[in-house]
Length: 537
Image (cartoon, rainbow, N blue to C red; front, side):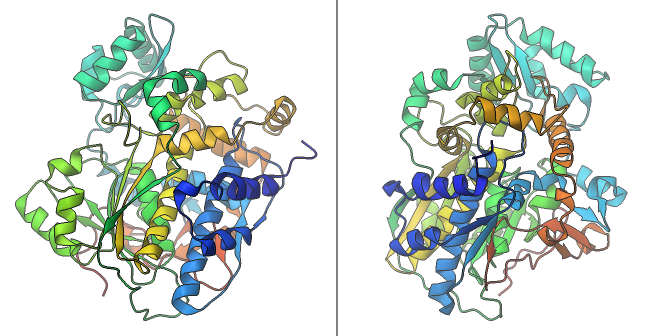
């Protein structure tokens, strides 16, 4: 890998894979700003995966940074450089694991663990629940990613697994025997169309692109902006120093898990006022909250009640952006559509995020990162990279966090355009749109792959390594291949932990730096429901 250079490849991905797609509608100012982005860091990849994970994250971080720099130039007359540290852009993909309190992992702090556990309503840490979400082989020898979502009971009912106290290994054997009784197409249809649970057959990339859904989504751009005629809206008046690009922009985050929340978190880092709508009656992934709630004021609001809807409409009137990350159709069933939202707020930018994309025969299905990774064929590529004849879920919440980068970029682009034209936008982003783009960046060649694996001695993953296991193994691999990297002090921002009941916390900062604009989180991380439902100004 002597001639391979991560920074050069990241720049190539930005300039030749993003900027050349005219469907994205990037302005000349944004294109020029992208050309000025600089990339620094270790020049060799270090995550043991066949696809260009660091290069992708760095390129998309460069796009977000460039868009933010154009906003700062328009708002403040400030012209500045954008720098992407490719090492930090890689750690961004494992941000969920990195918060600390006084140098100690948040996972070792009892008061945080207890607060997080309030979100795990259905005890998804229990082995028989957790191993419901994993890859198992079917009767026809194809592999299926079974998924228990945030409540495993429906999927357990479907495959005939009762509640029981068993070990992780025992649970895997139980599910393995049950799934082996199904043909892959049968369990795929039953899970998605009868039980309305996520789950997918593990395709190869060739198989995916040969499907009707693959053919349709393969023609889609990285993200989709649909213009809607509306009054143009100027940037809000800035009342603070720091040249924060999105100072005063109001964002509602109606989402859970990672992809959509990552988009709103990045907007918060750029100065936006973000209100996250949580509901104590609904579960969330507990381990994600310290990272995903950074920069946001988390409010407990039940939109299934008339009172909750009324309160939501009240803050919606003044919002600039609404990010919707719930399963397809959920928001509409609450009475909110693109049209009804614009009756309340004509200039609102409305963002939808899902797994499969918003076109094609599978667009109605619910899904997760692992589902899209298996759908598009990335799991088979990871397995083959490891020398296995089985699919393995790719490492880290990669497509989740990188879809968040895409969402942030699309939103900033829409905000820019809305100040210049009588228009607002519906924005569609999906894990699958990202994964297709990611796949098309290409893979490391045979020699590069060997050198990458050699940089990670002892690293081993199998089809039965679900996301918790993969995160743990990936962090251990980074600590082996890049000792001390995760503790690089300048990568982190210190903030109060009072909303968790602890002292100061350290959270990984945004994966881009602007020369003059302050990039930080003025609202600290906090537990669910800690804030009141009011805009800051």
